[in-house]
Every structure is written in structure tokens, then in C-alpha cells.
Length: 284
Image (tube, rainbow, N blue to C red; front, top):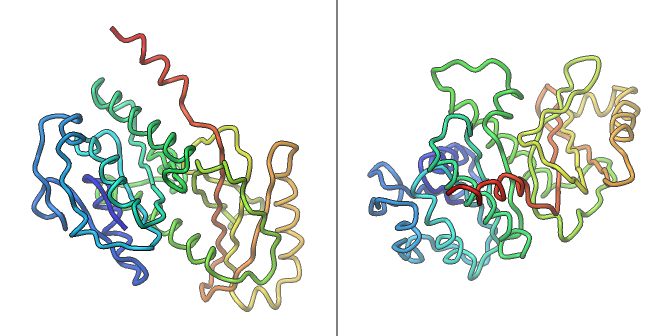
């Protein structure tokens, strides 16, 4: 796992609490696991990004790269991906910041990085990109205090991504998993609130033109054994999401947690925010 820039480093560090991950943070600050030279512009990071293959010794692995496009250092993301992709399968978590708080230059940088990474996913240069939006995550977690604001958002991302990764590598108790379309490599994560009388979805990005959605239920052993209404409620919820344009599947997994959980992924084959990118072409 590799985080690029301040946000990427913070999330990679959050992932490191789980023993399954070997995490590295790359940034210009000395506190980063790998410190690179500070450059003046986004373009200079692309031109002068260092060769890190000796430091990042991944081989025949699935490597997760985490980045936010508004920072200058994100200009080096394509060079980093090229170095990592030679012998590995690459997935990317892309963090979209609150766009209303960015300068004009930052907005342009962010849109370029976000759209180029999606094109990389569509072409198969990376196997998948997860888009997550800080504004959407804040809505999903509820009121967030100023102290530790980004830590809370980062924990929501890491906990969700980690549990989905665990479930993807586990055998469900029951389910009807459908393999997402090969061309659907643009995705987002989400959680389903199971605490109320009616389930509610909270997605980390407003993904459009979705082709597939998968729900991962984490249920403790006692509820799997004794809750006679559980299967009916899950079936009812999943069926309510079916339509002609999107396939829906699910799996139920046994966990040791007392609380029930449901995590989810949506997939699309369409690059998001094309309209924004075209609008930018009119800037003189």
C-alpha cells in the first residue's frame, strides 16, 4: 500500500493498524516514510518524480495507491503508477476534497488527476479506481468535530475498504455474488445503516451510470443462528435495488462483532465529471 501526498500518507498510516498491510507514505516532509524533493509546480513533480523502485519492492502483489489530486505532489501520480505497475496489479483510492474550498489552480489540478486516473482504469492500466468524496463521507458519518476531523473521515475510508477486502477474500455463509462487468473499473464504497427500521445507504461518492452493486453483510454467529427475520429482510432490501440497468448481488459473512454491518461497492464504466472537464476547456 502506498500513499502519495499528505492525504495519501494519512490514510496509508491508518491502514497500517491492520496487520495485513505493508504501508508506505510518500511526501516532501521528513515525517513521510519516503521523502522526495519539493518542487514548485504540479508539472515539475511529473517531470522530476524520482525512481522509487528500490524502496517500493512490491512484486506480483495487489498494490493499493492512495492520493488526492489538489496537492502539488499529486503531479507525480502517473510516474509512481508506472513504477509500481510493472509486476503488480494496481488499485487506486482517489480522495476528492471539498471542491468549494480549492483555489482555481487546485481545482484544475484536481480535475486533471481525477479524470486521468479514471481513464487509466478504463484502459486497464490500473485494475480499479475507488472514488471517494470527503463531503459525501462527512454526510455518511454524521456530525464531525473540528478536532480530528480528517482522522474520522480517514477511518471511515480505511475501515470500509479493509472490511470489503476481508469479505472479498472470505467464503460467504450465503449469497449470490455476480462478477462485475470487466469494463466497470470505476467504483465507490459505501455503508448501509442497519440500525433503524428501514435500511439506508450512505455512498462515499455520487457515482453515475452504475452497472453493478454488491452488498457485503457482516453478521455475528448468534444472529445468523437465531434471527429468523434476517434472511427475509436482506432479500427484501436487495430486491428493492434491482432495475433493468444494474445487476445487484450480495453475500452474508459471519463476524465476531456484536453489531451488524453492511458495506457496499458500486461500479461504473463511465468516467465521472466529463461535463466539468469540458467546461474547463473554455477558461482563457
